[in-house]
Image (cartoon, rainbow, N blue to C red; front, side, top):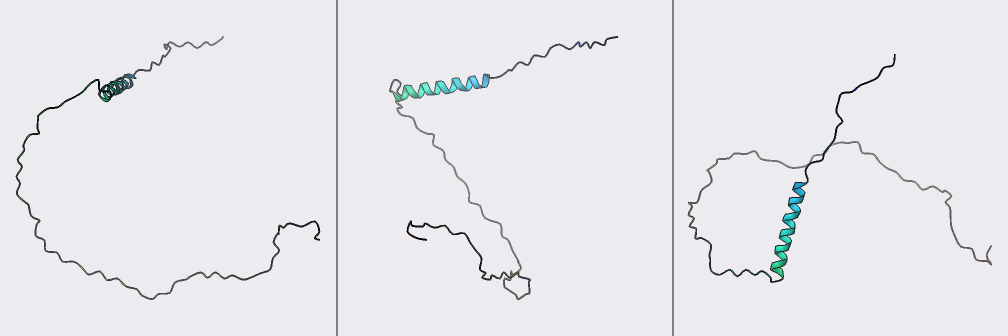
Length: 109
């Protein structure tokens, strides 16, 4: 008896949606560039005549800080002698052979 596997699941199709935000942003940028170009070339001109900002009267009463009675401790800073283990590094001179590179003239030995 041969076993055959049957699946009743439909094929899945992934549809990428979106991109409208990118298109909208591109359109807004293009429109802004066109408007800037039209003003820069003088094709459009804006002459503002008159107008003023509104007069605003602001009045406020100055405040005051609260009164505080503060008692604090004194901070003492100083030094004291104590014993700590400190490693000592000692150097000594020894004779060793090191490679030397030089130039030899044809007449030298």
